[in-house]
Amino acid sequence: MIKRQTTINRIFKLSGIGLHSGHPVNLEFLPRREQGIVFVLNGVQIPARYDQVADTRLSTLIARDGAAVSTIEHLMAAFYYAGVTNCLVYIDGPEVPILDGSAWEFYQGMWKAGVYEFPEEQVYLKVVKPVEATHGDAWVRIKPLNTLDITMTIEFRQPVGLQRRRVSDVENAFSILNSRTFTMQEEIEAIKKMGLAKGGSLDNAVVVGEDDVLNPQGLRYRKELVNHKILDLIGDLYTSGYRILGKVEAHKTGHHLNNLLLKQLFSDPANYQIY
Ligand SMILES: [Zn+2]
Image (cartoon, rainbow, N blue to C red; front, side):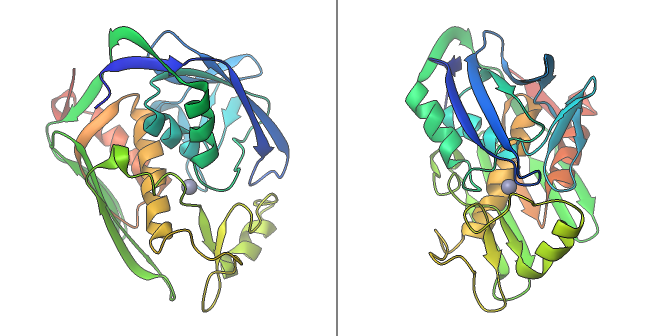
């Protein structure tokens, strides 16, 4: 368990295209003294926090004072895995680059930059009362536990079907980090009609066809799709501003429910302890 507040050891940059805009976007990572991850767009500081989340339809989008940054979830998961608690992320466009569709390149950037430890202890959030968020047949809940433990179930048409994975040692489950985002082939046209996914390709997403995935290299893991949903959940949970300790169980959850869970959690101080 990471005991201290940390930031990156030196400034580094990353560039790529936005999944939805298709436009190039540049990121610059700077060390930060205070706990928290903060994005900076056009001079506006937007804390990567659940209460700044303004849209969750296709990704997690944060907004403040007319500035908005979308698709923060994979980057947030990379911060979680790298153990970085404090960082400023300068961005010159409205969408975090999709890169290979996973959190791997973000994590590599942080790992190469190195992690700097402050003397201050990191602040954790421990769940003390069960909380849940439900929508239709989808749900996510969190119960008291001294570590972070996640069980995720997804359900899609064949050949995906029902997939489940439990990760009890989240911090060391690196197969989560490089599992890519995915879509069903038939959904692509509808998304493109909405003017979205302009930057989407087989280089940054797994596309599930009728019988198999369309990506020539296939899947990185047998459970890559459910892994990616866990990645999204870890990134979304990190918008709590803390490393959360609790047992999470989720069924067909997404960014909307993940955000709702945090709002539910923070709605009553009796639900959690900060220490
Ligand atoms: Zn994702």
